[in-house]
Length: 231
Image (tube, rainbow, N blue to C red; front, side, top):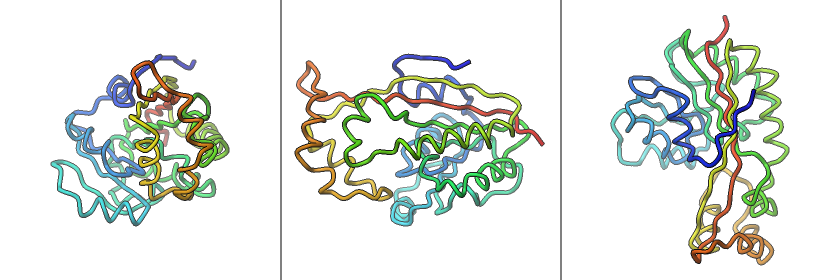
């Protein structure tokens, strides 16, 4: 049965659901590596994999962080030994995997995980004020549905246990420029800067004004945690 945890941060949910200390984790689709570094700060050893060559190059040149490594790789071919990984985390990244590769991705999970390993899939749900603010330039409704179908059809049969948790994350921005800057810096998406910086998007964003003079948009989230891979 799905659980509703109300307002949380993504990191709070991770810490409630899984033990991080002394574990070897793969951060799949790690982006800038922020989560990889947070996991390492909590006692994990982390390999951040990123298929986007632009972001992967930035990660390779960044200042080193203890117990964190970065490589350019996709989740269908993780450069680790079989049975060596305690957990693979997809943080807002599974829906970026082309649907034709999902079967290979979950076969790879079976290869890399230990007998008590887990797959942690954090995905944004396509509704709420966040969806309203971004859908004019970045509507991921269909790819997120494809990702969820892949979990049901390909992940669930491969694991003995599963938990599903829903919660909400608030994102606060000083103004429209800060919001637009954030989305324009993401190199792995296929919209243009002019798609983001236009009056229609700005009006939707500004409808999310809060009582403090800034702007808060709410993103509903879902986590599917798969535990104990089946042989």
